[in-house]
Image (cartoon, rainbow, N blue to C red; front, side, top):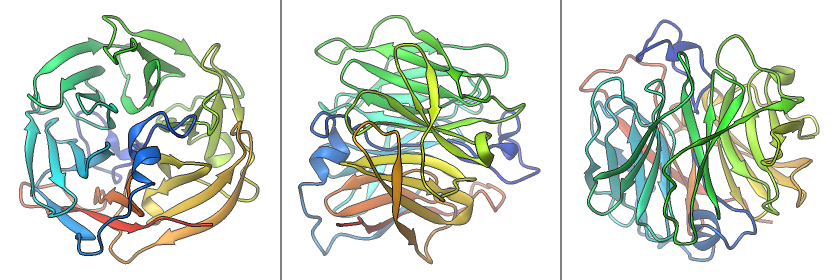
Length: 330
């Protein structure tokens, strides 16, 4: 979902990725939490539009469910921090597995029972109990060099991107949302181009729920790809003249797709057709508080973004935060 600055390393070279997101699962807009449910409720004006994360946390992904809480994952050690949107206060609710076992992308299911975590270069896909913090599933996928990056939830599966291999991972979910005991791999084809380095980034669903949308940092210097979940065939989404060289996390609300362009410190908003084959740029969000935001999640009329600060060396004392901006209307 994001890119670290040149010359820095986290496990391997995070430095060359335009990497890693988050966002909300939407399909037939009422299916999954943050975007569909949150868009209907107004955020109280007294709630903070910025709140701190623990020093040294190194955030990347963010998720918001049906309740007004933000869940953020740590690149540093895989901790998950939950903060109240009403007060900005929070605590660690999932203890990480240690250095080298990051949490990059994450999502929470609509029951707010399970957290689905992307493990970066550890090659792990993890499912944690959102209430107890215990790990209930842990899978190792891919091969040497794999980076499990971002995740999106659909009614029947959790889908994960691999930034260094042309494939997605599918963790099936039953009717109760219970995850399967194995992960399937879907090779990517069609117009998908795999670079020699970091390629796949954020992932979301099309407005009609028929396909997946994945950021590709290689095609045309950075493009949005529509992937058929049945066969992995990818087609480039027509975004008119919009370029997304630093496309990171994706957030879909109705037909508005928010594309976080982290190193540009901006969020581009496009209005998609139902099938997600083309989109029209409608807005660009900038804010002086942006310090390389990576992913986005929604609550009420706001969009919340963690500042990853990939332009500064991470230390135990480095400050991190989450900022909120208004959604685009009309």
